[in-house]
Length: 534
Ligand SMILES: [Zn+2]
Image (cartoon, rainbow, N blue to C red; front, side):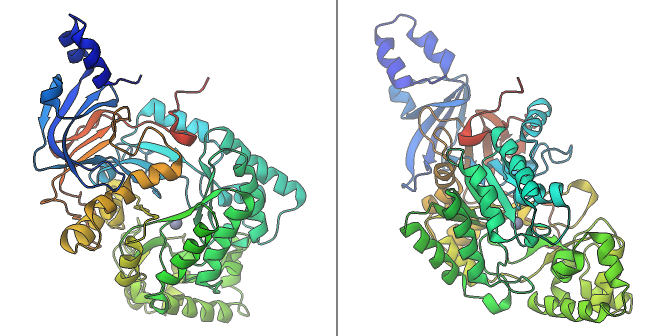
């Protein structure tokens, strides 16, 4: 359904039914906002009308004679396309996360899931689940290398046989057939880390057969891997995987980790810039927090110790010949991460949650490596790594014109009091700190990094911009109020300043309140809406 009210108005002159038809097509009129269209252009004072799920008019509504059933004054407010979270862990499949309110309050209307190599191959059934149950934001999926590897060869630290590789390829093909945007990998994580580069290229070749396919990488090193693969080697590897297979590449949560890499993000960004200049469609997404969130095992136990799975890991913990090597290497890993005082538990277990590894070790009168192993015997634990990124890197990255925005966030719901605040504040923090307070980047530039830039990369033609005919994913901000409220100590606090959010033309936040309309849609490749299994 594509409506063009300007055309309709010209026809109206010839038609007695003019006023009646106009009233029929305009459901909503936002009057007098500063419209930032997502292209990077300066704001324009304009009214915006919505008919059904699409933007039907942009301009001076009074002089064009536009009328609507619902009129909302948005003077002094900024009207932008809904934000696109290019790397998300929104829990849309869970009751507590379905409405995605932590994301809506940041102005986000679409999230990318299945990232870090984790996406399963049952893409259609997941999209179908979202269609049946309803979701608060639009969402799309990647199929994951780690998931493919795990399903075929488990946690074994070896290359796949030819037969196994064929199975992994069919895993990826199934996901792509069912609408995945491409292959994601988490080469930092297990079992993805056990893979040679060539294996990922092989699988990415499968994705490359589908037009517009994207390789989404949580790259192997990021600056803090153990043993080090090299911050720059890791970026070069990600580019190579996309370039040789023939897909686009996006570096997720792009930055340089560890105090030894403070100030080094420009070197990594330069590698991407060079690749772009030789014609590779490679880009990145970032947020501006200095902590990461992952799990204790990944941050404290070398990959070889976990080969074969957790039972094999515990067997190695119990082996007196192996234990001293593990202990030494855990110390080295903690050193890279800034020490056990920087590892903060974000875990269901109340005796861990909100404490640092150093505090837990002191309480238990153990060394930090001993405490880590004791905890891991009972199961992996969620942790943040505080102070892993520095602001200088983040500020450099925010100014790059191919840098999109992401949360990397998961709202764990009511059961877990501590989580990374990025789930609640990544987009608003970037706006508040880097645009409103610092003026480091302009508002249209920041908005573009959250909207049109991502839409172009994703190959969308009808989302990501405020233009007539586009889907009405719209965010309305009060810049005097925009602020991330979530902190490391008290993360469960929604962002402020998000006055209205429309998802597919439906108010999902109105006057600062979530409507729980669940107006999001499952999206397949190229922005096509998934409309159900046949
Ligand atoms: Zn990641």
